Length: 183
Image (tube, rainbow, N blue to C red; front, side):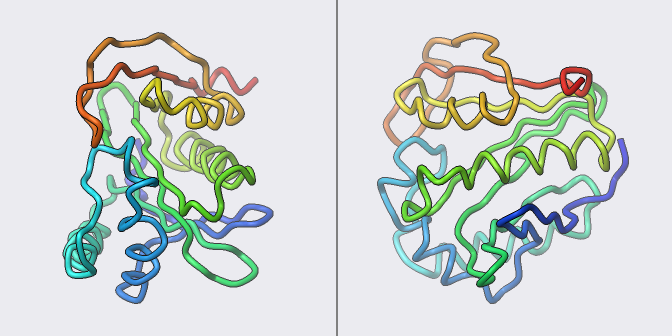
């Protein structure tokens, strides 16, 4: 694995970049305080902006580590931060990463997350030198599975009551892509 950390990535519509302290309000108001966005996530809805600032401070402190991958998803045209995509579990020995993501509700259904996920998969394979990228979703959130499929990931199976999110114990569908799957 190449320990390159969170590098900047550009797509047709997006700029994926490391966070800055200036992003706290965008995170809080854009998605972290929205219970509809966080209902299927494993971290609680932020009760106030101070929670967001504390989380952001932790993220910023980790950027020095070459094995930390956490991107702000920003619109390329305006610079507005609209979501998050990150490696939530890294297994260096297996050259594998698990990715998690969320997006402000105003941007749902526009292909934004698929575009971001494809770019992160490419970065993790081509720049970081990984072999496998996986993700899972609560089976009650099939839109997230469609994002994974459109990004080239294959469904590997359902694990019953394998995770806990803001709705409680849940069945999760796992998806993955191998570097060799890209052709």
